[in-house]
Length: 227
Image (cartoon, rainbow, N blue to C red; front, side, top):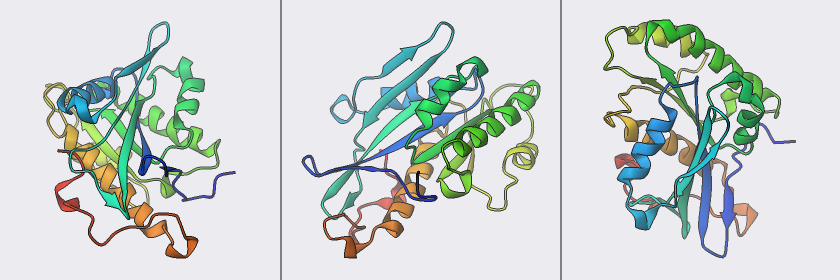
């Protein structure tokens, strides 16, 4: 059973890397795939892996990992991120559960169009339910909200989206995004990355010996982890 609130980052001592898993979650056609496609396209090939598509009959899950250009260094270990999307259609809920295993951070992508509000709420509830099945909670996981498709005409105002989706005891960061053009796509990724790195830094205990702990010389954190 996972210790509530404990990040499940993978520490590779041979390559001196710490790997964090970030999952993009949300309803069908909300822009999760567009987010990952834009990020993958903008990162130098030397710093990222191939974009892998795990296709189903009518939906797909995407995955790739990357090493940020200004990667944060934690006691000699360089941070590396694995980005995943989940399939948006409800019939692939088993795949969603598999993708969520050992997740460190989440970007919930909401479709800003009025007619998609019910799907947004259902998907957010589904996220909570799937985490609960793995003895996890959003209260313990770094996550941010992304309000996508802000360039379309029939969109809900941000304050309504905040009321519907950002109404937990602890409010989280949210971003107005146009993933098709890249507007605030990296801002969203930087925010969730910084949040989970901060949590990892707090969790790390020097008394554990070989486990890396946060360095006071972490470079350019205020500028984000992604160039």
